[in-house]
Amino acid sequence: MMRELVAVVVGGLIGTGLRLGLDELLWHQPTQFPWSTLIVNLLGSFALGYLVARVWPVAPVWLRSGLGAGLLGSFTTFSAVMLAVVTLSAFGNVLLAGIYLFVTLTGGFGAALAGIRLGRRPTDAEQTEAVPE
Image 1 (cartoon, rainbow, N blue to C red):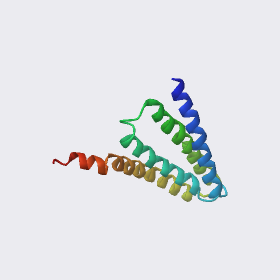
Image 2: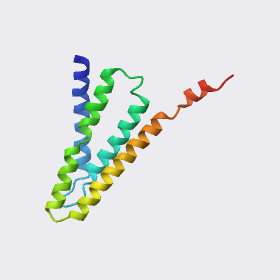
Image 3: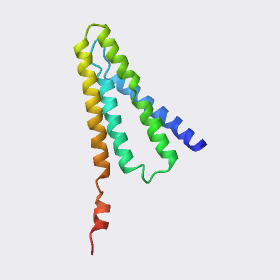
Image 4: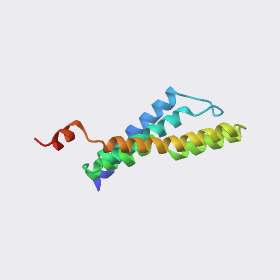
Protein backbone atom coordinates (compact mmCIF):
# COMPACT_ATOMS: atom_id res chain seq x y z
CA MET A 1 0.00 0.00 0.00
CA MET A 2 2.84 2.43 0.81
CA ARG A 3 4.47 1.88 -2.61
CA GLU A 4 1.18 2.71 -4.35
CA LEU A 5 0.74 5.86 -2.25
CA VAL A 6 4.26 7.06 -3.03
CA ALA A 7 3.72 6.33 -6.73
CA VAL A 8 0.50 8.38 -6.74
CA VAL A 9 2.20 11.30 -4.96
CA VAL A 10 5.20 11.29 -7.32
CA GLY A 11 2.96 10.89 -10.37
CA GLY A 12 0.74 13.68 -9.06
CA LEU A 13 3.68 16.05 -8.69
CA ILE A 14 4.80 15.35 -12.25
CA GLY A 15 1.30 15.58 -13.73
CA THR A 16 0.54 18.82 -11.92
CA GLY A 17 3.81 20.35 -13.10
CA LEU A 18 3.11 19.33 -16.69
CA ARG A 19 -0.40 20.76 -16.44
CA LEU A 20 0.85 24.07 -15.05
CA GLY A 21 3.47 24.30 -17.77
CA LEU A 22 0.91 23.80 -20.52
CA ASP A 23 -1.48 26.28 -18.88
CA GLU A 24 1.30 28.89 -18.84
CA LEU A 25 2.36 28.11 -22.40
CA LEU A 26 -1.22 28.43 -23.72
CA TRP A 27 -2.55 31.07 -21.32
CA HIS A 28 -5.98 32.54 -22.09
CA GLN A 29 -8.47 35.02 -20.71
CA PRO A 30 -11.58 33.58 -18.99
CA THR A 31 -13.63 34.73 -21.99
CA GLN A 32 -11.42 32.93 -24.54
CA PHE A 33 -11.47 29.31 -25.67
CA PRO A 34 -9.53 27.23 -23.07
CA TRP A 35 -7.09 25.49 -25.43
CA SER A 36 -4.75 24.30 -22.70
CA THR A 37 -7.51 22.48 -20.81
CA LEU A 38 -8.81 20.90 -24.01
CA ILE A 39 -5.34 19.73 -25.08
CA VAL A 40 -4.56 18.38 -21.60
CA ASN A 41 -7.79 16.39 -21.46
CA LEU A 42 -7.43 14.99 -24.99
CA LEU A 43 -3.81 13.99 -24.36
CA GLY A 44 -4.75 12.50 -21.02
CA SER A 45 -7.66 10.55 -22.51
CA PHE A 46 -5.42 9.13 -25.22
CA ALA A 47 -2.61 8.30 -22.79
CA LEU A 48 -4.92 6.57 -20.32
CA GLY A 49 -6.58 4.57 -23.09
CA TYR A 50 -3.19 3.49 -24.41
CA LEU A 51 -1.88 2.59 -20.96
CA VAL A 52 -4.99 0.58 -20.07
CA ALA A 53 -4.65 -1.48 -23.25
CA ARG A 54 -0.85 -1.83 -23.41
CA VAL A 55 0.63 -1.40 -19.93
CA TRP A 56 -2.07 -2.32 -17.37
CA PRO A 57 -2.11 -6.05 -18.23
CA VAL A 58 1.58 -6.41 -17.34
CA ALA A 59 2.27 -3.52 -14.95
CA PRO A 60 2.43 -3.86 -11.17
CA VAL A 61 -0.27 -2.15 -9.13
CA TRP A 62 2.06 0.61 -7.92
CA LEU A 63 2.91 1.59 -11.51
CA ARG A 64 -0.76 1.62 -12.58
CA SER A 65 -1.55 3.77 -9.54
CA GLY A 66 1.29 6.18 -10.20
CA LEU A 67 0.53 6.62 -13.88
CA GLY A 68 -3.28 6.53 -13.70
CA ALA A 69 -4.47 8.18 -10.51
CA GLY A 70 -1.21 10.05 -9.95
CA LEU A 71 0.21 11.43 -13.18
CA LEU A 72 -2.86 11.46 -15.43
CA GLY A 73 -5.28 12.15 -12.59
CA SER A 74 -3.43 15.36 -11.77
CA PHE A 75 -2.65 16.24 -15.38
CA THR A 76 -6.28 16.12 -16.53
CA THR A 77 -9.21 17.51 -14.61
CA PHE A 78 -12.94 17.47 -15.07
CA SER A 79 -13.35 20.43 -12.73
CA ALA A 80 -11.32 22.67 -15.06
CA VAL A 81 -13.59 21.70 -17.95
CA MET A 82 -16.70 22.57 -15.94
CA LEU A 83 -15.16 25.84 -14.73
CA ALA A 84 -14.36 26.84 -18.32
CA VAL A 85 -17.92 26.03 -19.45
CA VAL A 86 -19.49 27.98 -16.58
CA THR A 87 -17.11 30.94 -17.00
CA LEU A 88 -17.67 31.18 -20.75
CA SER A 89 -21.44 31.01 -20.17
CA ALA A 90 -21.34 33.60 -17.39
CA PHE A 91 -19.55 36.04 -19.72
CA GLY A 92 -22.20 35.53 -22.40
CA ASN A 93 -20.26 33.08 -24.58
CA VAL A 94 -22.88 30.33 -24.35
CA LEU A 95 -22.30 29.09 -27.91
CA LEU A 96 -18.53 28.91 -27.35
CA ALA A 97 -19.15 27.11 -24.03
CA GLY A 98 -21.33 24.56 -25.81
CA ILE A 99 -18.79 24.06 -28.59
CA TYR A 100 -15.99 23.60 -26.05
CA LEU A 101 -17.99 21.07 -24.03
CA PHE A 102 -18.96 19.14 -27.17
CA VAL A 103 -15.39 19.08 -28.51
CA THR A 104 -14.03 18.05 -25.10
CA LEU A 105 -16.49 15.18 -24.66
CA THR A 106 -16.36 13.83 -28.20
CA GLY A 107 -12.64 14.47 -28.52
CA GLY A 108 -11.94 12.81 -25.18
CA PHE A 109 -13.98 9.79 -26.18
CA GLY A 110 -12.20 9.58 -29.52
CA ALA A 111 -8.78 10.04 -27.96
CA ALA A 112 -9.41 7.32 -25.37
CA LEU A 113 -10.67 4.97 -28.08
CA ALA A 114 -7.63 5.71 -30.25
CA GLY A 115 -5.32 5.08 -27.30
CA ILE A 116 -6.96 1.73 -26.56
CA ARG A 117 -6.83 0.66 -30.19
CA LEU A 118 -3.19 1.67 -30.54
CA GLY A 119 -2.34 0.00 -27.25
CA ARG A 120 -3.92 -3.27 -28.41
CA ARG A 121 -1.92 -3.40 -31.64
CA PRO A 122 0.83 -5.98 -31.52
CA THR A 123 4.36 -4.63 -31.36
CA ASP A 124 6.97 -5.69 -33.90
CA ALA A 125 8.38 -8.14 -31.35
CA GLU A 126 4.96 -9.65 -30.71
CA GLN A 127 4.30 -10.01 -34.45
CA THR A 128 7.67 -11.70 -34.95
CA GLU A 129 6.93 -14.15 -32.13
CA ALA A 130 3.56 -15.03 -33.69
CA VAL A 131 5.03 -15.97 -37.08
CA PRO A 132 5.64 -19.73 -37.34
CA GLU A 133 9.11 -20.79 -38.40
